[in-house]
Length: 138
Image 1: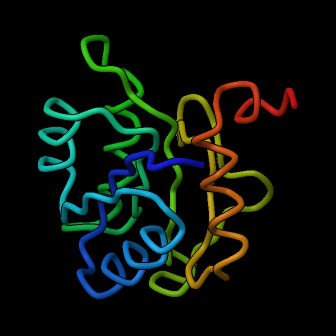
Image 2: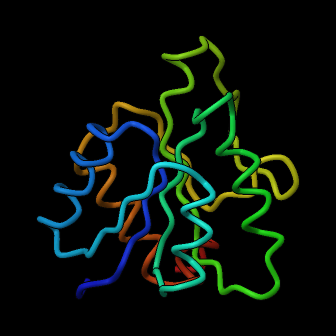
């Protein structure tokens, strides 16, 4: 696994800190920002193996908008995106089937909060391991 860098964009400082500690204990370097604007700035400055993105931030589902904008970037190398969200708990809304969609929700992984440690670590490892694992070509 090495010490790959992960960018986490989540407006809940307590949750983000807990996930940061969990990932750091597994050997990852984690930078946390609390809004998409700061996330884009971090991506301009650094190289990351993964972006972990919340759905519900600020005035609503800013994470979905951020995921769309990230995937449209031509001048930045955008790593895989893992959406980690509590949208079901916050809104009662949930995705039927696979929520990932190239246009509407262009992410590489999707987990709902609360997530169990082994599940989160397995998904992070899958996504940082390279495109062949992200696309299911193991």
